[in-house]
Length: 340
Ligand code: PLP
Ligand code: COI
Image 1 (tube, rainbow, N blue to C red):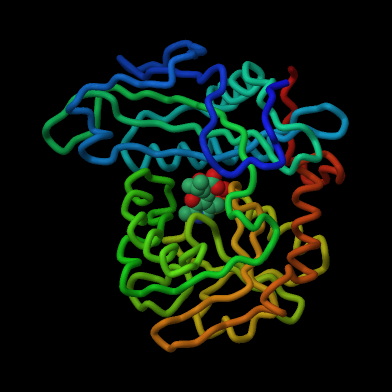
Image 2 (cartoon, rainbow, N blue to C red; image 1 turned 135 degrees about the vertical axis):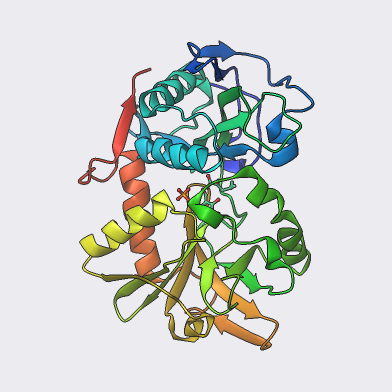
């Protein structure tokens, strides 16, 4: 196993042994090839560079106490990559290819899978882009589908400690990230400014409101939003929100725990009614939100004591993490094992 201080890992890039690549050319995907080179050489007129014809995914591999390696709902990532590809008129990687390449690249980098109990995991980053040259605005004729992996710790420094978020109507013109329900690279580029402003003000995440009315909550930065009140799990319904696989799973787990589940418009003023709030996603897992500041109304929405995770978020976190690590039974059939 690699000599890494797993417990101290943040969410960054660490070089691993291999990435895996397949090229779409002349109407077919090439046999996947493991590659040690971290660089890609593409044509300067590629559609990815000029027109943002690029999309990515995010998943994780977990080492269990039983020494088994688990992927969580990986076929859902494959499906979402397919919808991103279709939306951006890219070649669509078959689900089997996506899963097979994921398993192969995880296996090839087994020594970088963080040990059970470290709190870290192996982040999987599949991405797809138009590598063919075009000067006119039209889809490329060649595509690269690449997956790299890198060991990561918590996305937010605090780990499972409440973060502070801010509603910044002036700078979220780029948001929400999930516009069109796809994980398009360009959406994230356009969110960098609002993210930077929010960090400089001392907040860890932006809360994006719907673009048309600036009234309804869309997302919590690079994660979905949920609130808990009256034994109910509430999460925004919006075509601009990325359909989070974590959120989809939490809705099922919340129902398993006997909570009501509501997917609907969430007026930002409803923040005053939530007993708990959280950001959820592959990278974020569940990151409890302790406080949301709204500069327009100069109002602080505080959840619980603002400093510790609430009881429902904690239960959901333990259940989700437990399934991913193999500590809880996989009652929904969400786990795929990677044979090492
Ligand atoms: N929303 C955005 C904008 C994201 O980038 C992510 C991360 O992938 C999520 C939500 C969470 O989605 P998932 O749970 O599928 O990782
Ligand atoms: C993820 O959770 O996988 C994401 O894509 C969020 C962020 C790192 C972009």
